[in-house]
Length: 138
Image 1 (cartoon, rainbow, N blue to C red):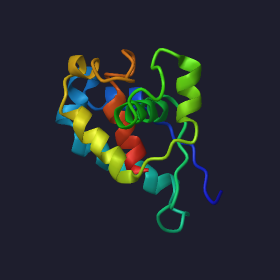
Image 2: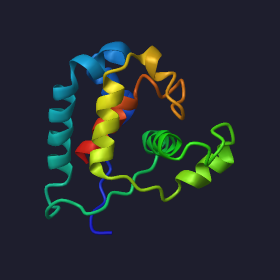
Image 3: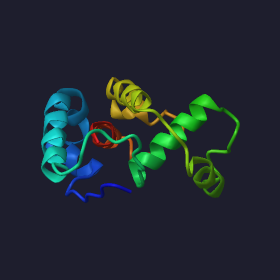
Image 4: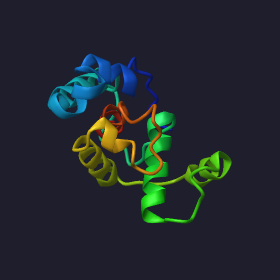
């Protein structure tokens, strides 16, 4: 591990900062990106170059892994079996382009439409785009 940084930001906090649960993803995406870039530059100014690997934990990372797994490998795991899902996404790898693709896809949906995405929980549907902006910018 070359760099570790803890920053005062999360999917919920970023969503609320940029318009709330219904508006943030659609209307304030460029503002979110600029804010995250500034925050990352402030906290990682000592880092040298771009990272080859980012290890992500938490709700957004787990939701992303589950959504991607269920889309790419349908039937591999029962989405209702929380233990099996947790095991299946541990170590799950995605490329930066995958994160960007999911962000774009979910941003274009309403919160109500996101509720139909396999692997995305009701409590995460409103904040997932902000969480993906955090991961993508990082």
